[in-house]
Length: 315
Ligand code: RIB
Ligand code: CA
Image 1 (spheres, rainbow, N blue to C red):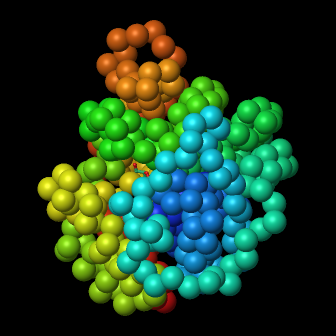
Image 2: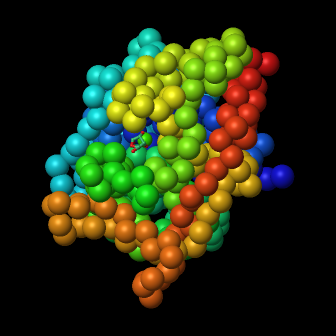
């Protein structure tokens, strides 16, 4: 099997960090061309540092990490320290990573890498606000013919919003960028809150990860031990939803998930519902079917995959 080339665009964040670990643990399936970072959960200066820290912890200081957009395409930046802590990855000890920050801007990296790639060959995996992706598409629409598909964490339908009553954080943080991406015409699989709220890092599941007794598992358990506080209090759930790792899990084992081809449109006019993802799940309009909306997951199978892959770091 030839590993699939991917670019992970993220805003670590504990859940982004676990997505990075899951991707790094799977070199037979995934060839990480680069990690691009963006202002999201915390400002860019921290998300880029956090991504580089995860590469260090996973023993992959060779992976190129890039800093991208410090702010959204149009709106002012919003962040989420109240969920992720002031570092963005509270639950793990902070250190200055050896993994270098690349000089090139993330948007330049995305554009140049895609233009150099075979047609329909590279998968984009955004797990934060879509500022880098939207800016790259606007700057150079020709990159799209080199994109195989996009697997994105963002949006919500039945779950409602988590940052506003009607909008999920990644989409609300840069709705104009999201609108550009969702209209790009390439295949898009969406991991919204409707599915990510089904994969909860319960105490038992975190204990199983901690029992692996390797540095990556230890960092994961520590971060999840912090990350679950906000969601368990807000939703009364049994653990924090592992939003971003759902994208990588889909790439590794798509049969864990159920999707439906339908239209997703982003609200960019109304302040009341800004960033809302209108998912036409029942095809009640004639809007183009631009996304595969994920609505169900085998949660036990997801954690079996995650735990099994994290165990690889101990070998
Ligand atoms: O709404 C959840 C999403 O926003 C996740 O990607 C989390 O990391 C934050 O970026
Ligand atoms: Ca994220």
